[in-house]
Length: 361
Ligand SMILES: NC(=O)c1ccc[n+]([C@@H]2O[C@H](COP(=O)([O-])OP(=O)(O)OC[C@H]3O[C@@H](n4cnc5c(N)ncnc54)[C@H](O)[C@@H]3O)[C@@H](O)[C@H]2O)c1
Ligand SMILES: [Zn+2]
Ligand SMILES: [Zn+2]
Image (cartoon, rainbow, N blue to C red; front, side, top):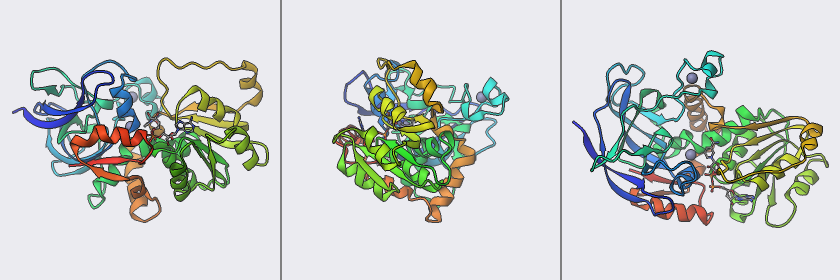
């Protein structure tokens, strides 16, 4: 039997989100219904509701979530009813050209639920990142459910489902930050601070946090930044060079995703260093730079999709590190809110007052 639950949808670009009834079909083959316990508010949800990702409205928002498997469809073997899972948007297919070459972190054909959740009038919903977890329950592919220790707090470990994994992985996986590296992170929201935490975990020496908000810089320091730079106070590139013997950082992570921040990342890096773009630009953004600078400065210019993570490999490990007290994931939960407070949470995020607001159900 299809069931009705409450969920947060964005109907059109720029309009405030609303809580409404959504209909979830019986899980089909390979599908799973998860009772959502917690879901973080990521900047990407706001980008969806602004029409910055695509225009497949209405969206069912929310994608950084943890919950309990409530129902499984035919053929599901990887999870069982009652399992505690973190949802992911990288259920690798094992068959695409990336998977076949042994690079499943780039999987080009990840699995999502085949059936659609709908509004009560039958209008099909597009779930954000194939998840849609600002809802009491959601329908996903079984591969989108990663089992983790059920003793962990859903509000905390659900954040691994997107922003925290993206940031941490941008440093550790994509940027390959290693012991003794100098690292600079531009934009210290949930994603950037996770990159800082990842850089610390990987043994980076100098970790420079750059943001234009003083509160963010304070939190970044608590999460492992050794130095902070106020981006509104002047030349961030010069500041990074000053803090790295005049050379620039080995790895610079742009966790904002704008032409001006990427340019800063490019020039704030040492010769042969690495730039990692993890912030998501919008389609209207362009960049013009001297091509010779790309050549003469060498190194690697990379993008990080989801921190190049493999959920089955990374989520349980990171949950273990958190529970051992070696990874302060709980510091990312700034406030716990209700389903009908997501729109307020966007405003709170915009004002820079939180790392993550987390909807708790
Ligand atoms: N690549 C991925 O897989 C992935 C996954 C999740 C989120 N993201 C993206 O990461 C970005 C950050 O997400 P978030 O949730 O941390 O957002 P957020 O809004 O919490 O944080 C952004 C931070 O950047 C700062 N900032 C903005 N403009 C700046 C500038 N010019 N210079 C310095 N600092 C500046 C803000 O003060 C804020 O602290 C977003 O673009 C989001 O869409 C990417
Ligand atoms: Zn694949
Ligand atoms: Zn996200």
